Amino acid sequence: MKYCPSVFRFSRRPSREVLVGDPNRGGVIIGGNHPVVRQSMLTCDTMDTAECVRQTLELVAVGCQIVRITAPTVKDAANLEAISSELRRRDCWVPLVADIHFKPEAAMEAVKWVEKVRVNPGNYADRKKFAVREYTDSEYESELQRVEEQFAPLVVEAKKRGRALRIGTNHGSLSDRIMNRYGDSPLGMVESALEFARICRQNDFHAFVFSMKSSNPKVMIECYRLLAARLAELGPDWNYPLHLGVTEAGEGEDGRIKSAIGIGSLLADGLGDTIRVSLTEDSPREIAVCRDLLENLPQLVQETTALPDSAPPWDPYTYQRRKSAESALGDILGGGEQSVRVVVTRAVFDQVAPRISPKADVKPEAVYEDLNLLELNPLQPGEFESIPCDTQWVTVADGVPLPPITAFRLLATRLNQAGRSNPMLLKDCLAFEPVPLTPDAALLRAAVNVGALLADGVGDAILVRGESGAGQSLRLAYNLLQAAGCRSFKTDYVACPSCGRTLFNLQEVTARIKTRTQHLKGVKIAIMGCIVNGPGEMADADFGYVGGAPKKINLYVGKNPVRFNIPEAEAVDRLVDLIQEHGKWVDPAGVAG
Image 1: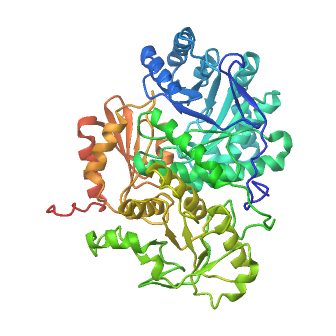
Image 2: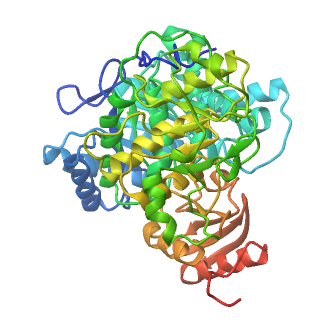
Image 3: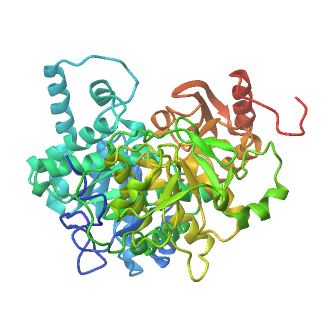
């Protein structure tokens, strides 16, 4: 089972073309040989026609090619007619997508007015109650028939009207039926989507795309890989396009890093026909990140010399860190069961070391020029015979004519073929740029190159050199390890982007929560505007802050709601109280308990 022809050579996954909209008036083709499509979502109330139009025009002005609008009720779905009419009156023909959760009747209304409808298989025909139940085969088949009765009318209507669909599975909202049969797993996400795809195909409807979103980049990567492999197994006519995204990525540097790890690593493997970067920020900023990711892609997948067709020495569908020998890395230990370490250049160390406390969480752990590193060219297998022992640290030599992802994957493969378990130092680049990269470009490049390898389970230490700022490069390395789930040195946040379902101002509330909690090392807090993905996406969070009703907040411990209908003005204080009750609170430095 393969998700791409080779992990050592770039080859874009062949996919069928799906037309979204009128080909003569702004229609967009997803898939085929067409460029990857950029899209985003409105953050306002769908009943506010003027604001929906304003935000759409603003997105189109910065290069957004598809605009999604939530339709939580039939009333909201009906107002899509007014939004679409006003946009077309202004000669804006960007395709519109209705985002549907829970209400098939809203989808049946929305499909009349927009060019595409997104449905979530986890909640379109099911309700999530976290119920534990064993299904017999006959009971399961009966449930599938019920799902078909709910979904098939939309498929028939979309086919009649020339609309497209997105079958958008979310890690946080798998149905109880899927959870009990497949678990909270990539396999469950894939099977959930395939159930809906089979209904489309039974009705000879093929204008649909898939998505497999998660707030965890590693889970997201595994899901898309498994989906691509399963579609390839099902046959060449299952080559439906893929919509990529890391959901609830958050804001700022953290949100960009998570998105770049998940989306960028898949693009570098040839997967993906349209992308959405989900940030807890104003939507036009998402398009800027989409554009930067796509503009960086040619450097990440440059043409390479002939490489082996051997399978990689890791399971691409189940994360497991590569086994390596523990060994000294300067004055500390690395490899083995140790955390992935942060290495800096001498120039960076000399600038940042005098300003860093010995007790600081963010600090250089080794200096590159001081290490006893064996720098290898993985294109030369003979070099691996010179490795003296398994405790020798190795890396790829600068100047090797390969993209970093390919080079380090090949290095890991060569080590495996030689029976070696040497610890590996990853680099974000194998040659310095003649002109320093902008901070945004350096961040995305490092996140894709190093993040993709960490998601493969490869790497025992990392070196970020593409960022020219000394302090910034050090912080970027640590943020990258946290986003990839390799280390936890600060509070981790799962924060959804705003939309018309959101019951509070996400940007303001996220800022308030961060102000109170950002010193809580190792604590994970989810901030959700509504209940759609909340409990599921919060399953691995310690605490959750979720909009339950207008100006009312529900608080969660893990996926379990424990406080209800808290007035918004009090909710951040009550969240802090909850963290204290569960023994996860520490006072900020310099504040008495």
